[in-house]
Length: 250
Image (tube, rainbow, N blue to C red; front, side, top):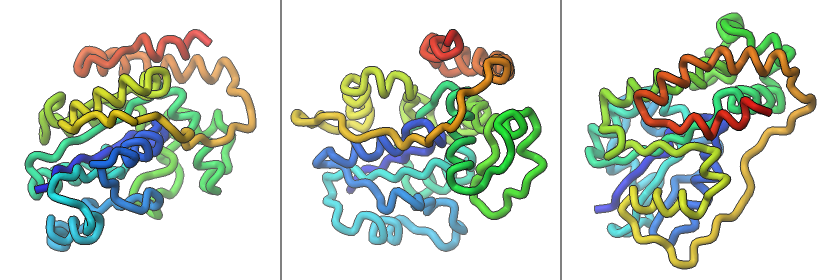
């Protein structure tokens, strides 16, 4: 029987880059399309089944293949995790975390690029600003710039459903792009799949253009906002804050 893994987020953290490079492995099959993302396990529980999931996304997969799905909304919807483990008890999850300030800025420009955002960056990235805009048109709000970066809240929810470490692997974006070969080797080991001897990291990050340089006062306020959240994340999940400290010293 095929194995399954899920890249569950976070948004604007290099998940597309990760998924595209994993797709290059001869034993890995990734659900298509990448955009819009499959989000299969956001459906009503009565309408999903492992048979339908396999036939819809992985009809050509062999029993020896490893099947993956990238749906970044899943990290914010622990109910998706419950549905997954109910149907696929040995499913594995991958979370990619990025400096939450850099992630928030990238999220802002992505929303701007796609016509969702008309506010200035200072207005949009102010604490509580996400609560004053309509968000019911999307499975995940395009405006949760700050809340989406409080990663510990999401990981705590997932820890009640899966074993962090054994069935959920945390990758930091900064290490993924600075040491990609070693990071991908660790991911292959986590997925219990042979390392591809000819594997070479390719492609570009799904970046969003930025029109202006962020004001230093706004950047400092964002780092202050995430400071305690990041310390709690480090304590609970051993995230290397030194990788993010480099950005805070710019």
